[in-house]
Length: 457
Ligand SMILES: [Zn+2]
Image (tube, rainbow, N blue to C red; front, side):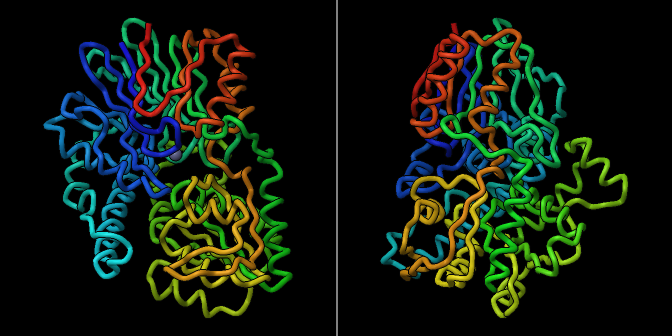
């Protein structure tokens, strides 16, 4: 039996792992590579193995770096099903259609701007997405599924709505795959499941070398940045993933708005996808934690408050620019690699009184990373801009466990995994975490390299 790491290894995007039991091959996630000049080529180069051999695909969650190539993979598969929670399936319906649409637009754009490189067709179209969605089989948390002779359970990962880690009983032992691991105490979702034991563990390591500040202070830190910017007369632009992060930001702002601490600052959610995601969050109370259930029972929608405005159409989005009074704009994409947030950056990046506030991971090669790293000039829509706005970052909003949280979660295993394989991290993050796990738990720890295989003894 072995694991093959064809993506989401040596980096944080393009997640795709194969479990080969000798009798069957099962795929786990089929994500898009994002950020950097090589991403498009990586996405077009195939999956690193013959996907026609896969008996099934298990999908941990809907983020595009885990689900974005599902339509491409399914197109090559004669009959395999895609297993996911109901919330993940609903979010994929939204996100994969959006992904197809974006690629179609980019392809058209490329045709009009030949200097940006030769025109390439989209990776897949809306029909491929529809065909992929028909293959989805929804599963409940904790339900035991028999897939190609394996017993598979999806467990809470606490990362985004519908996110799951996988507990796979292979007959020879238990394999746990963390998927993207969330943080205990994060709002809306239940905390990550703590498996009793495992023989093998695949653990993500996005923040393997970094701590997050505590979540208790993060709302206050957000409020301080907003207030200070408003005092200067500027705007706060929050590039945020439409799914997950935007809802967490709204959850925090909701508390301050209801206590009157936000004043009358308008909050715009300028992302059609975030607005649709908010609706999907509303449809899946089965994923909520006790705090959120209690709020709802009291008749308080934790993602809605007066002062919050949704900008769905392009006209509504453009009208935000006419507003003279200070305001907050939450918009995607989270790494500023596209989407409406780029327009708001262009409007605010040159203003000393405005703040660009990052609340999520910025992958290497993205505009967000260049800004976070202190870049003084950036390119937007083919034009150079001086960076005069204040650049702030709140890592405490991360949907990924920080270093200590990963180690605490590992400490919960009563039967510690014989082998730990770290994936989903930049090499320095994974290596740093590997050293600490060896030191603290005396464990056999490997770091998955792109294309590497690990035999499970
Ligand atoms: Zn994720």
